[in-house]
Every structure is written in structure tokens, then in C-alpha cells.
Length: 262
Image (cartoon, rainbow, N blue to C red; front, top):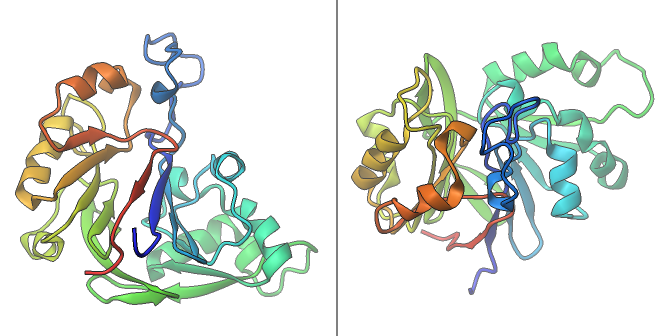
């Protein structure tokens, strides 16, 4: 399309990934590549711009599968380990291009500073440590990364603030359990909505499949994709066959074109 803008699902699994270590659940034993899910993350590519949303424990593997030479920014939705523990693997990008641009809330940066003190402590002298520029973001305040403008959308994850991101006519929102009406109002006129759907059964901090479908219908995007999926959701092809029209299970390495302009 005219903007040459794509989103690639680097991972679509929940915190343990699929297969779960040591599990003999049928989905974990599946040979279908769509049933194998790394931890949730996406890559947004423009003509000359590469942006990652979240860098979990599978970050290195994901970027070997979907290689890019340059990384212009990393956006972090929240501080949970399955969304941040690949941070050290930004080093090859730092060695090639220098300072790395990160975008997150003050609370997230505080957590990362404790978890990765050797990166954020200015007095740490160990060679090879990447340098990170902290760009503080808050809900409802747009920010730009090169040609892209992002609008942070606030959702609730069992009492924890998580920021999703709207860019043009696409929104990526993961780890949501509740969203307020004023934030839903910021999601009008979407072509693509991406939200989490953990499993069929209710969960205290994630949307179930039926809850995600209901929210997707309220928001009314042309297409809604589900991510952050547990093995207990079931086989990809079987679940997909029962979804309403316009609703889809995402899978690792799926690429979507989208309009980055409103």
C-alpha cells in the first residue's frame, strides 16, 4: 500500500509461550506451526523505520527469524517479565547504531532500572553495556517516532496500568482486562484492532475469548486479531473456525499491512 507499512507478529503467546516447558498438553505437542507461540511482541516497519513493541525473553529468536539491520525505537507496554526480559539483546543494534531509544512510562522505567541496573546505572563501567535514552510517555498524549505518530491507550491489567498504542488506523493493546469508556472512544474508525484473548475460561487479569469478542464488537474495527494466547485456548485451526466474521487468531510471523495515517 502507499505507506509501505506492515506489522509483524513476532510472538503471540502468553507468558509461558507455547509449547510450555515439560507440558504434554495436546496443543503443546502439536506439529502445526500456528500452535507454536513465542512471547507477545510486534514489529512495525515503515519504508526506513523499524519499531518494536515489547522485547520479551524470545526477542533474540524473534529478530533472527524477522531480521532488521536497524532498530529505531522500542515501545514498552508494561513492566512484566514476558514483555521486557529480552532487553539485553538490543546490544547488537547498539553496537551498530549507538544510543537506543526507549518509550515507556516513568513507572516502567523505574522497574527496568532495578531489573537491569547494569544498563541504567550511569556509574556502571562494564564494557559492552548498551546505552538507552529514556523517552517518558503518558496516556492520551501522542508522540512521534520518525514518520509514525503513536497514541498511548490506557488499559487495566488486574490493577496494573498497561499502555496500548494506536498508530493510524491500527491499535495494538495487550494484557487488558478492563478499559474505560473514554479510552474506547479513542479507538474509533480502526481498520485493525489487536487485543489479547488468553483462553476460553475467565481469568483475573486477561480477557477470555468471549470477552475479547465482545470488546472487539464494541470497538467495531474492520478486522480484529487476538494475541497473547494460552495453550488452553485450543488448536489454532479449530478455534479459528468458530470465530465470528472479521475476527481472527493471530499467529507468529503473520504480517499485516495497514494505513499509518488517520
